[in-house]
Image 1 (tube, helix red, strand yellow):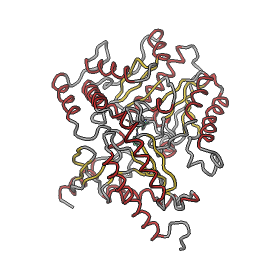
Image 2 (cartoon, helix red, strand yellow):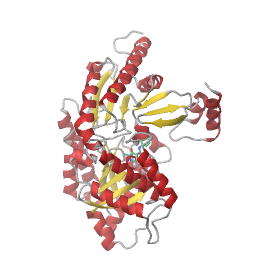
Image 3 (spheres, rainbow, N blue to C red):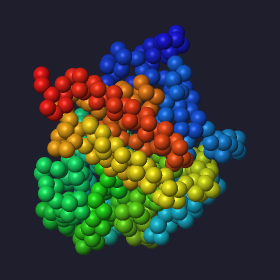
Image 4 (cartoon, helix red, strand yellow):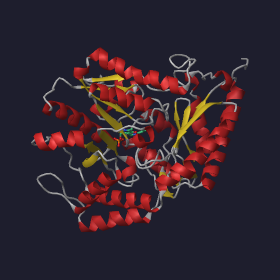
Length: 466
Ligand code: PXG
């Protein structure tokens, strides 16, 4: 290891508290320093090249080093690096992006509220939803229903909306007025609610959990339901196609607002511009972040549907909410350049008609692998469920942390793939080609082979003795 890497690791361990990280464990191991990126690859400080099958953190959708985005940032920085959108002012970049987003989103959306991140956008959703019901003369409608194992961000409110148990146990979450139902996870429910059912039959059952919760709470108390079209951080949980249309019917039946959290699914990831289009819902509010700028600079926001926007605008007076960086001109200029690039290159159509289906084909070939229990994909996001006995759909013991073993082999093999428990997940940049998908699957298969060999040698597989 070079002295430069060692110095960086020491300085990092001394001063930098990382998100979602066991600081002591990382300090003893030494952090990996990523120094540059180009196309689908990043390089670390030891000059190891890594195929980035996670698009950074589900965001670098156009890949690294796109000149159009870099130029847009530089030009905006020179002209006007910052101005706010409080106090009856705005900037041309923020206006242009708002107009573009209104055109690219489903017809019910004509307005956007900008934030700096997905978490802030979901906080904004809570404030919008409660404001809406106050203005509608139904202030008792406060409860927002979400799902276990969903991820909606890390502020107090967004972490409460999310259904990550580990996050809730730190700091007494969720905050009041947020409740959770179970997730439409066919594999996780294979020995329970999904036993003996087809995926589609299970989808209707899982959607029914929403109605049960609404009736238990009293529909007059329920403000909204929030969900990711496909749960991302929860392990690329692709719901059965019966699930979302049934959720929409239930929300409509009880007059409840529907929030689609598109932070991962938006901007083409699922093969349509929006995950709600792929799954057939008409949300009232839509969260976005990440892919809006391909992660080049931070930006998030909420698309506000006409049902809510009209009430807020016509009856609301001042909405007491906003951020210093709401509509940041550099972020908006980069967002605009990013959307132009996605359109010019026809990336959404390419995911839908070419690379998405091709990825699904290649993924299905992994089902012959002796530690792969199921595979799921939607557009360019996919999950590979590790199993100690695929035919019996048996899980590895959780304490073996086989997902992390596989992840180590991925890194050693030059691939970034994420582990959510024993579910390996990928979400490569939308610019990926068929040839690069082949390259990615060769790396994935290599990592699975090594994981299998290690599990076999350790006696972790079904039928092993000792
Ligand atoms: N909603 C969804 C659906 C997300 O995936 C957020 C909101 C929050 O966005 P910000 O910009 O506040 O981080 C996210 C973020 C992971 C991982 O481990 C995923 C996210 C963030 C960090 C880690 O997969 N998604």
